[in-house]
Amino acid sequence: MQELIILRHARAVPWHPGVEDFPRALSEAGREHAATLARWICDHAALPDEILCSPSQRTRETLAPLLAMRPDLECRTSFVPQIYGASTGTLTQLLDGAFAGSDRVLMVGHNPGFEMLAFDLLAPSERGRLEGLPTGTLLVIGFRFGWPGDAGRGTLRHIVRGRQR
Image (cartoon, rainbow, N blue to C red; front, side, top):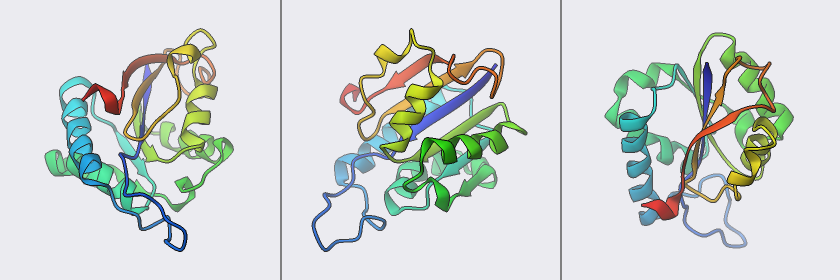
């Protein structure tokens, strides 16, 4: 079985007109939640073979606690500019490449692309469990028969939401 871990960045400082979006940092609550998510991944999930992360400030800061806990994952991490503002088609193409050599992929990024991607990858019977993808949400989607054959038939194995802290 192959697995995809989708992680939408934790809560960032608010955006204001005239402020660039890309360099926005995590809020204090976001930093605390990112550390909680890192511990959850280390305690409950199989570690990823490959990590694809948007290079924005808030996604890097969301991933940082996991890399601090598991420095061996740094060599498996790529900061991929195409993830920022990506369509589901772009995200799917990135996953095609990642799953070609990996069984477990962690992707850290943004909405609306991540929510639409998760919805597209899950089996219809699983989609009702999604209820959106607020900041700091982590999904583990299993593909019983592998990627891409099971895309659209994935199983939501775990969901960790920010409000579960």
